[in-house]
Image (cartoon, rainbow, N blue to C red; front, side):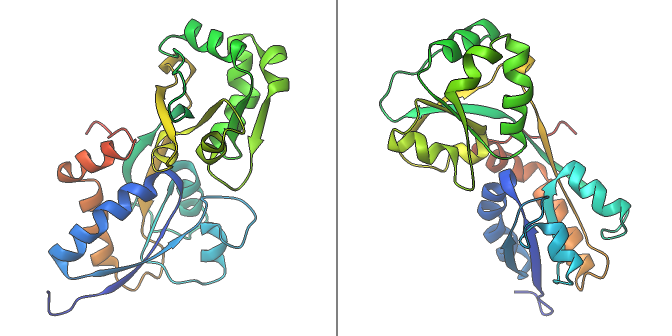
Length: 239
């Protein structure tokens, strides 16, 4: 352990959380710096949302969140300009209940037919679900057919309602589908129909351990971290 080990405060949201939690112990072992982690959404009105936590003066050395939300914090003077590090891209995928037939969604037409024939469709209340409701159904030309049998799942993972059998197929960011038991991952939505979410990290103004924070960001974005990033359902960024 290093002589001057730091206890670092990290705020992380959504799709990168699984990768961060898997990589964190290695960083601690290598540096001796411990990670005190708080989970919260990248945006929104809840007190748990990362921007609101920072606004209320909660301490943080690193924030990990949706890239455009991080850009907003930089613009507002809450995160150090130039500290932003690109981490990974998150794509939308689909699950069915474990053991159920896996419909074909490999092409745009296959996805269209799967949605038309599905008895019920579930999607998240986050950015991916809003995109599916407001844009993807329209792009596929099936808004009238798919809309009435689709519903937004609030607060809980979409895969959990699919595992219970409440709905036939479910959509959410892949990294948020994979950790949930009781479902089978079918695949990612075809690239032509994707909405890609970029995750990034930065160092808040007033961070107590900025040097250690930079080391953590470099580690999370390093080539050595990419196998873990990919395993958790994210797509590494070409560098």
